[in-house]
Image (cartoon, rainbow, N blue to C red; front, side, top):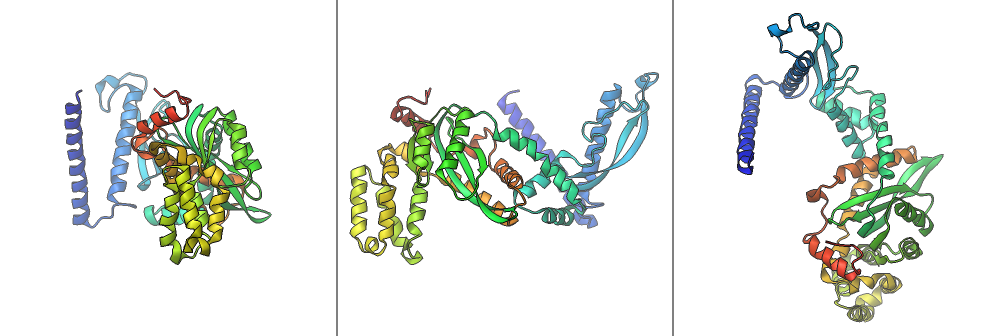
Length: 423
């Protein structure tokens, strides 16, 4: 089928779907029927689709259609139906499941003993990933679909993610990464008493310019370079042999941990973290004036120009008012200056830390909704589900972090001596 024929077929299909939707809405308006719940139109449609699909499965199993004379003397035949209620995205739906006389029919769409379809499980996991508690999920499902779901059912659905989490956390990784961003967020976990613990997060940008969360690790106590060393060593053991740029905050000892793991890596202090650390010392009314003054430093064309911009800021009225900001930049200078040597294409990608900031913001919202977690495993489960919703493997449109990535990749290859083996 040509592209033109495929487009025409898709247009016809869309038109048919629109007609069906229009008929359903007209019927709902005329009868006053609800869309969801018992007697709802979507519930009825879901039931009809499921039952038709089950009949098709039975025909395939027997080898002949219903009422077909070819089935006489075949050794097996239909034997009525049994009623079964399953939980679906449209709520609880009662379907007539066909039976055969030999009892050998094993439906795939609605398996034996199954009381909910896969899509319903995904609904629970999606709500769980948004930080909703078991009580909140039960209330939501009851309000939306009129379905009472037990706490045990929700726990079983979410506990099934544990194996998937273990596989994800130990999966092999690409050998070469242009950029890896590392950061930590804080969550509350009950361990006798409720304590705050850091969760270490690593986000990589691969050769195609797509972001991927490489892992999540719960630490003990405060964020430290020693724990980061363990995290980075695990990434190396999972296959990461070389990283061009590791972007991080200004944690003391972290650059040494990075270079000990990947000796050729360039450690780059995250500009966003540096700006945030600077603005923390200043009154909010001075932020509009501070931002452009500090921007002049990190957008300088050379290191010498950046030094001049920092010097000018230090003797300015703002610099005199906030000497702590000047000291912050001076303390981070050796880890900040590699950024100034990069060509514009790489600067644009390295500075754009929105990818890890947006992920962290989503994770913080998820954990904030829950308050605290009963265990580290429970926290990792929720965080992983949130990451799974944010990151679609190999989805370029969703995960792509930079326009004109190939141009940036060529600059990476030149700047880092062809370590990327770019084609």
